[in-house]
Length: 155
Image (cartoon, rainbow, N blue to C red; front, side):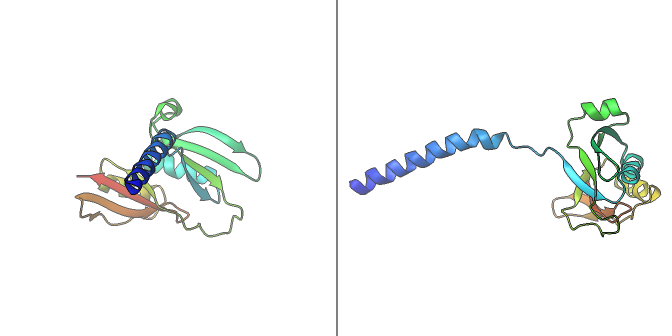
């Protein structure tokens, strides 16, 4: 009987702990994705040209360090109103440093062939469209500095 009571007490404590933690964890969201680049101005032009993104703000803008925030939208007003996760283009510490290894930026696109062509036309490196086991089409491309970008198309 003591084992049953102890087990029930442990279950109640665990349930209470989860109930308290769940609301705090439910508020966690992805705020932005940072891409480290040698020249944020050049990178912003690439992402604007290839993906139709617009600048929303510059939290840091000094001679030695810049952060340019871009989001989906043909105009700055549309990009500011967008509900999508913004990209923060930030200056790397050493301009001659190779791009750091990072998880690929993943962008959902409406047309894979046009997106790959836009990457190449804007100065990036194109890739080949592939099919995933989940029925998605994807391609690995890169910005002009070599930062990986995964393009994703729902079929």
